Length: 217
Length: 132
Image 1 (cartoon, chains in turn yellow, cyan):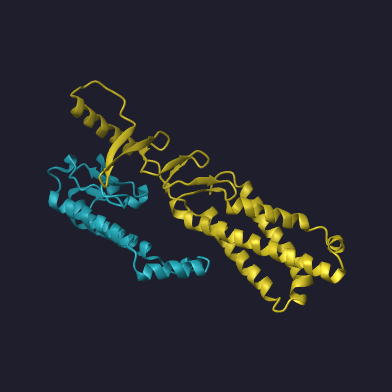
Image 2: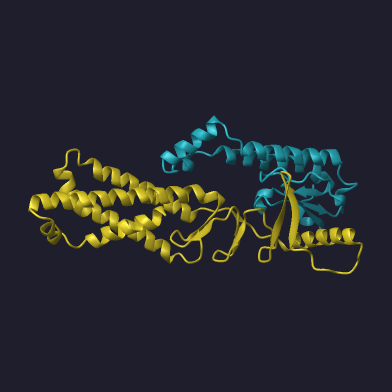
């Protein structure tokens, strides 16, 4: 897990509060009582919520594919090898700083491996150094502050499942809140009447709705 | 037999990854000049080839690994608390193989091969001790 974890707790509490409000109000008051097979809704929501939380925690607490730093001996050995190679290539004995890119061929295509000065290693292709976590990560995608961890090779699938299940959860809660308002307005005789009765939680539902756009995107 | 702690380390060599056939885990099989005279080149290249083959097997996709993945996903990855994945099992085999090779071939010549898993599969560290 990365160093600043505050935003992760914010993410967890945001999801928790929204789902709790959904359970507390919509499910209890309207959906279960007024819809046929209404009791499937809290069950489905609960399962989706648990799956989402599982993926979030797995993304946050699992290793994204951190490449350990090299020991001082390994760094010295690499430098020596490169210097010897340079000396052989250029037939010179004077000291030059070792080159900071290494040319290799992958399946016939020439590529350059970059040197990471902090970790003192030649990074494999698609690896990158994350300054927040202060280490190199394989197949580095990005550092996600919401999750509080880098997203790389080893936790990409959990991150993707988290984002997908969060989208589904948002859509689920939003659609059933809208159903709830429609039902209430049907019962109470008017859309505005329905809103007056339960005003408090609609900001949360709106947040949910807007977060759908940012999450799917 | 003396333990590794009592001896002086003469040299450490690091065998790097071989990316010439793609990103799969493979280590260079060239024989390091520092081991000249201490170890038989064929035995050494056999050890590294077997390691490369085992790493290839670890990442092989088969029906059982596919089932493992699907079941794990459906149970919210709680399944992984109960069973070891195919990859982990092969990694354990690799650890055991390295230990065997050390005990039979390399330690009698005062050389130790370290499990590359400790360096994040970046390099194989070979420690050469002083003979005395």
